[in-house]
Image (tube, rainbow, N blue to C red; front, side, top):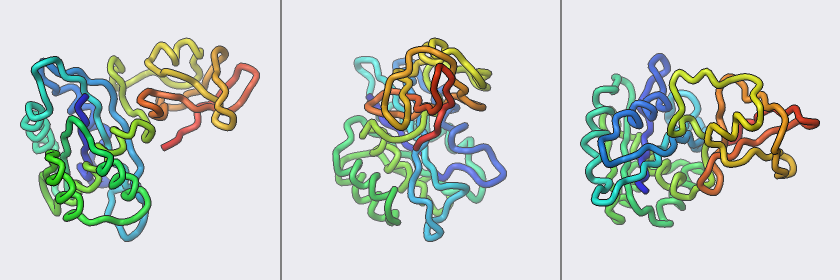
Length: 233
């Protein structure tokens, strides 16, 4: 699998990083298959510059035999440069294998401020592609963190899965079987972890399951066959 991280790609009045993630998924060349795009919550703190709530995005991509992460870098760079808006500070990270040190760094980014120099040094030490594509280039911090959290496998909220259309009309009350058919691996009661196998789920404006143990899990609350989706990070 190939892990891609992007961050700081927008301003308050321009389309957000999640939309760019969908654009990158659509731009993948032959030999690569999009799996999932996730939003990750980093430290929300006034000491850290951010556009809205300091979230970064990741993409999980499967590669056919004979293809590797290096082939994606020029494609992703081109799309991100075409997307660039003044005032943003985008960063791009692309990695195959992700060492535990990068996941540890990512978890720190959710708890404390870190510096761009540390992100760059860590990526260089492990041979991970990390680059800034404009502005201060501070987006490299969140881009590397997104890769680390994606590789961990139990963080983030799904913003797109393979096969989902965009715009996506799947909203409001939906049968459990319809939610599962959308690629959600499990529906669980948030308070107990109990599996939900029947009934109706109000997914809200968009289906946004969590990413846990490498698959999409929708957490819900309610009972008696009527459930409401709960957003988690």
